[in-house]
Image 1 (tube, rainbow, N blue to C red):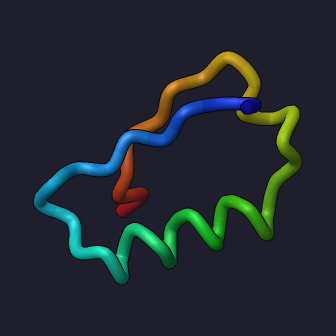
Image 2: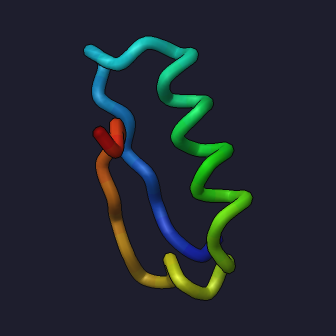
Image 3: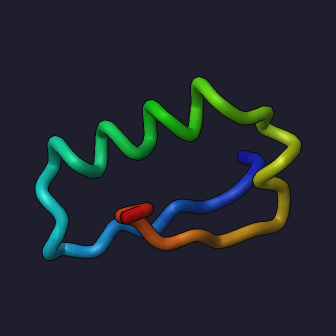
Length: 42
């Protein structure tokens, strides 16, 4: 696993999925190696 994404409980499932899809489509796995990021991106 290249990184970890933490999703706030206050975020709707739809928004979390949109953000994860955006990250998956617009970046390489290696960009997230060793990182922990919180969602939502907005």
